[in-house]
Each structure stands twice: as structure tokens, then as C-alpha cells.
Length: 176
Image 1 (tube, rainbow, N blue to C red):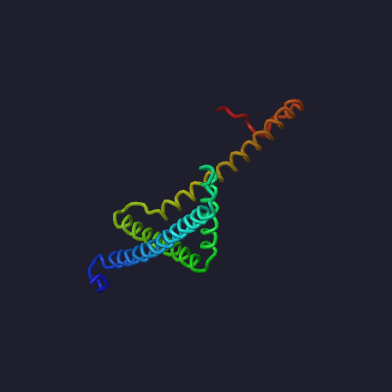
Image 2: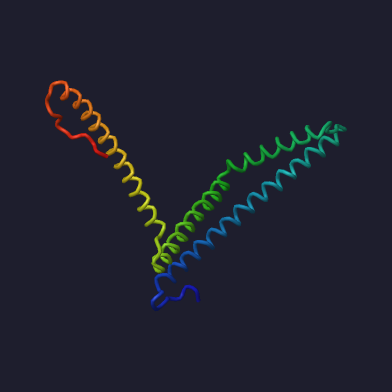
């Protein structure tokens, strides 16, 4: 039903919303797969931790302090997660998560921009362009101020020379 063709004035926005919904579903699936992978990794780390503790107990050894217990836990977790993070499967899952999140974010931005334009409000891309122009204008004004100060310095340096020589200065002094 959701994939049926749309008609009417809102056809384009409805299609964009459906594409956005599909992108969101892809992202949620990828996120679920990623979190399942992390959950399995934590479970594997805990199982390995328990195996080591049981092995110590079978040897008649004890963990002398909480610090030692924590160091053992960190060592095991570090090793288990390093192994998982280096695996092709994890790289595939994480890559899919990042790609689907980016695709969803782009679709979301397109939908928001379309809604803003329909409401006669400035979109993100229009605001970005306005801020870029303001930045460029500020740079131009700064350069012009520097050039004007240079001209004023030259003018003020020429004025005393003209007064010493008895000649009128080329430029009148500022009255402001």
C-alpha cells in the first residue's frame, strides 16, 4: 500500500517521505544488526571472563584484589573487542550502519528542505548560502578598510611634506 503511486499536488513530497521512510527502515535494521553484534561481543567477553575465573579457581588460585579482578576483565574485554573489530563481519556491519545513517540523514534533510520551501521559509541550503555570502562580504569589507587606512596613512604622510614646501596638499583633510 505504501509503495503504490501517489497522485495530486503533494505527489512529490509524498514520494520523498516514502523514500525517507525506507531510508529510516534501512538505518534501523542496520542499527539493530550492529547492536546485536555488540551484544554478542559483550556476551562472549563475559563468557571468557567466567572461564578464566573458573580456571583460576580450579588451580586453587584466588583473585587477590578488586583491582586485579578489574585488570583481568579489562584485558579480556580488550582482547575480545579487538578481535571482533578486526573481523570482516564487523567491518561490514559497521560500514552498513554508517552508510544507512548517512543516507537517512540526507533524505531527512531533503524532506525538511522541501517542507520549508513549501512553507515559504528559508531552507538549510539557502541559509548556508546566505552565511557564505555574509562571510565573503565581511572579508571584502575588511580588505577595503585596510586599503582605506593605507590611503589615509599615505595622505597624512604627504600633508606635512606639502606644508613644509609651501605647496597645498593634494587631498583635503577629513572633516569628520
